[in-house]
Length: 216
Image (cartoon, rainbow, N blue to C red; front, side, top):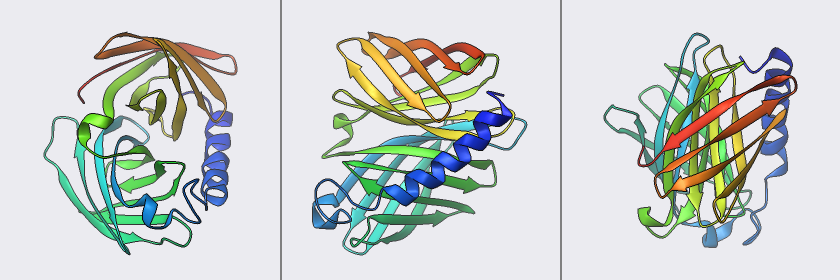
């Protein structure tokens, strides 16, 4: 795994993100400007293996619906609520719970389900073509799932460690150059063609490589 210290930091970082992201750049708590579709990815770990897939979340006045699709499996329907005052979103379905906050055109948060606990990252888009999804893995001193969404030059997603633990990935794409951050570490790489990303990650003394392919 990326490291017990990193995972403890990740847990604190996730709490900090949820505490800090109570206002969307488009208005207090997101408001009506935050309504619409959010496309993204998630990663989860049960402590011995990791998994992940794609997400679509639809925000309406006071409500939220969506579909979570594990890689290689059928979609799972989600229903829940949206609080326009603070941007908080909660969704449940088939034993799974997603809790996050809308901020700056993103809806990011935590995942809990029968396949473990994890994180998710989504981005606002008028249609599915506005947000491209990449699902992949990482290896090296730790291994697991490494999933990203791309909307223009903005990247958002999540990794999940085979040995337990998950954290959001955030960053940018400038031309073909990728730069990413997560609690306790950084990653870099490149978009080698329209459907393939790859690069390196570092977390303290731990290092490795990552790769992703589109579609998920």
